[in-house]
Image 1 (cartoon, rainbow, N blue to C red):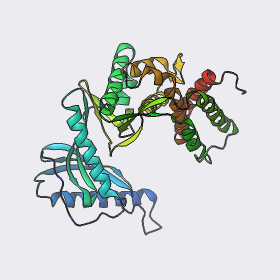
Image 2 (cartoon, one colour; image 1 turned 180 degrees about the horizontal axis):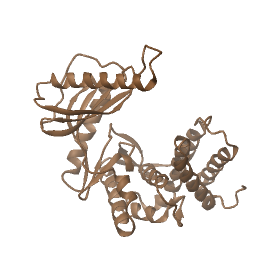
Image 3 (cartoon, helix red, strand yellow; image 1 turned 90 degrees about the vertical axis):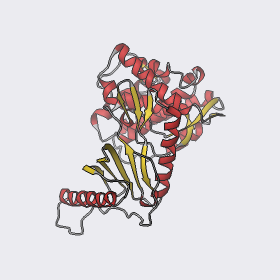
Image 4 (cartoon, helix red, strand yellow; image 1 turned 135 degrees about the vertical axis):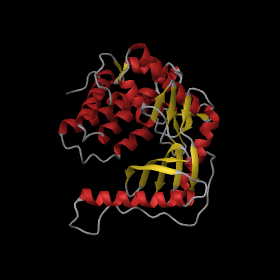
Length: 342
């Protein structure tokens, strides 16, 4: 299937997932919105001259911000996304540009990403290849020993390969990150013990800030969300998915994000940890040399703290993930603030 950008004049409007009829239950309003979105995208796709065969259109996600569908187009299984925000055209253009860049960068090796098959920026619609295999995080959850170590090293290589061409060196400003955390809304966290845990995490990061301020740090362009849920794995190949453009930030942040996500989704609690993360996972992922040995001692532990703080807030309503995140933060504090008060 050839890749292309098609220009049209119709501007997408936000999907109304609420009903004007107050008597309708929420589930029925949602079902009506889903059916309408499916009909709309099917009508649009069938009107495109490049699409001569369409079947198996199934909604995967329908919201007032975006819709995602799986569908078979011209004999190929694809994913179609439609964005409704005011900048949807820019989102589609950036998404296509980044996926085209990655496709050329990765070639046909064991690091891949789904590709842009067609795009209609003015409609906020894009068609993507279907990434094969289960999610990377699900595969990792079933592995132990050498198999887990090898796939984690492979995951680190994926990130290293992605970031290698677009990098620049800078100096680290830890106070910038701490100020951003202090602005986080904590209204949903009402337990004083939980608030104390986050306060102690900030203190641990402040203690590190005194020694790592101004240290060398590598910045790179990535899609900013390489975690186990945003990649698939099959036949020895990792496929990145849900890529919507590039952004610049420390490579250590990407590494920290991957490891923290993995830690809070682990089914078991590790006996040996480093900065709250399973030591074996840390060693395996970073053996890829995605970040330097010096940053593993400086910026990496600090940014692990940043990601743990953010994940604690975002996953607070989910008991199992909150439990895992609490255990990781506690281990982090035991290592970083061994004399802390209970």
